[in-house]
Figure 1 (cartoon, helix red, strand yellow):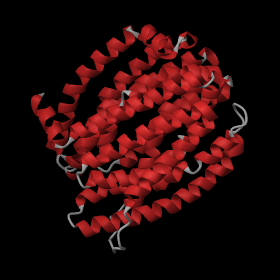
Figure 2 (cartoon, one colour):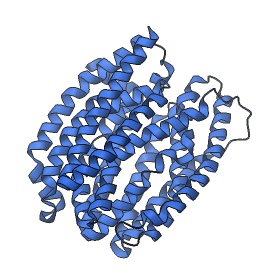
Figure 3 (tube, rainbow, N blue to C red):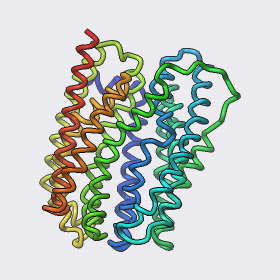
Figure 4 (cartoon, rainbow, N blue to C red):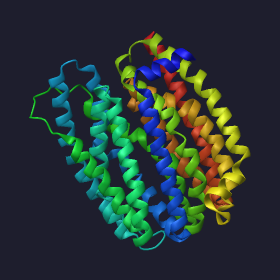
Length: 409
């Protein structure tokens, strides 16, 4: 255990963890403050439009930021890395333009569930550009093993959204938060961009397909946290029910930063050692030793304190969320132990297409099961389905990890 933690610290993992912790605290405080200063109807509308946006985010930039993170660590020549970054930037921005146009075409349908939300979606279209830009800049620091700078961007981003987003929302309503949400990552991305002089580079085989497959695979992650909220809004059409469900999911999802920080710190090593079976097995064993204990202890504490946590943080009008919170905590344990580590390992070793297979299965199950569960049991049904799918997707990722190891024998 000591060896695992020492290796984490040596890779500037403490900066990543501290930044991730700070980011999630800011995200949680942002949601908490918005719940307090906005009416349930306003918060429900805001939750709905952000959930709808989640369908498009994974394909922002055609996943060029993911391709860069996967293939750039394998290039020893600094000039080749610079050329690959430049290529990814311009191709990604071009694809984001076409994606924004597609989102524009979907706006009339997206606008039909909880009232007139066209002004929100008109602003959120631009988030497809700002999200890709800030993510690509962050990936450049990760490739260079500058985890401290990577962590710093996350820190500033979350702090600025918290301060300006909630502050302006207090005076001008939820639209002001959306505007801050879109513009802050764009400004930060431009500050750190530093576009290099054009450098010719040979594009690695499967570079484009890898990014697209990661985008498809990321749908599973995004939809796991968004499709349930989206369907609650579409099927129940009650903003207050959307707000209650969203409040129950804030903490379980926010805590995913803990395993994600650990994986983020080791991701480039996993990519470099993608053909080393012993390295991958050793990493997986070390991870499970550490996080199985952490997941069950943390899950038990949160489960048995659910009523207290919900009433203190969100108020009595959200008391109904406590039972949903308990259900989602069970799913959180599955995400900690299986879904997050093995999904990321598959991506790091280049099997983004396998993640996409899992994503498609989860997408189909999510839509079908949530459709019937929400009609049958309302928001409780949505919580049950989401929690179960966190375990199912983790088991599928673990199975594919074993398949990959067998192919490397």
